[in-house]
Image 1 (cartoon, helix red, strand yellow):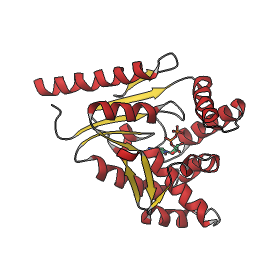
Image 2: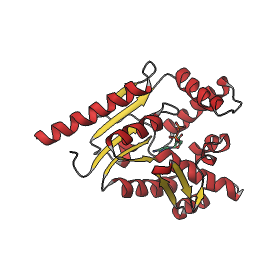
Image 3: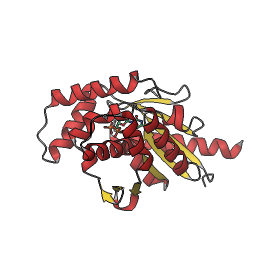
Image 4: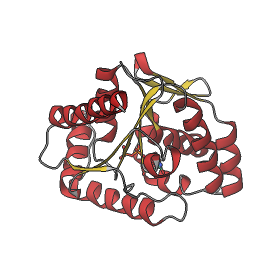
Length: 227
Ligand code: CDP
């Protein structure tokens, strides 16, 4: 039996498969799952809808007012009552999200919400700064990555399966560009936490990766119970 509040933090670069893995880990352990990338994507979507010029103060205000609702059973995300599950994955959102997530006021609002959602239960969160900033005392921290070629290929397969016309080369460039922006920003850059377990999944399948993390979590729970 897990203790009442147990936090699993999964961080890593773009397209490493964090959300797929985090969702499966959460389902198998019966933990809640919080996709923090979907939150920054939601703010980006909301901003794009206004058609306003890029303005940090304005975007910060939007982030303070936004209502993001994860309907886990339905696998859906709602923003201010609208289903945005598909809309937050469009190329327009993906290409802008790293600029939006670098805004300090946006991060303050999102991190406060992530802590509120995660502080009183058993939860898996995935993102860029979960183990370093949002929950530095998380019980288990993973840094999930794969080569950029592999990450681009996974995204390519995912998108072409949905019937989207994409170029592998362009996807790879977009991923590298987002990684650069996410790693070089001043506030909460993408970093591996010192106490995170590094996991290169380039040659690992989804089940292997999921089982590896579940074993880590169970091991930690076991240690906590004995101490
Ligand atoms: O495409 P992928 O699933 O890899 O990205 P995502 O997890 O949906 O995150 C989208 C973007 O949100 C990232 O590129 C970051 O700019 C930002 N993000 C962040 O800054 N901090 C987080 N904790 C999560 C995402």
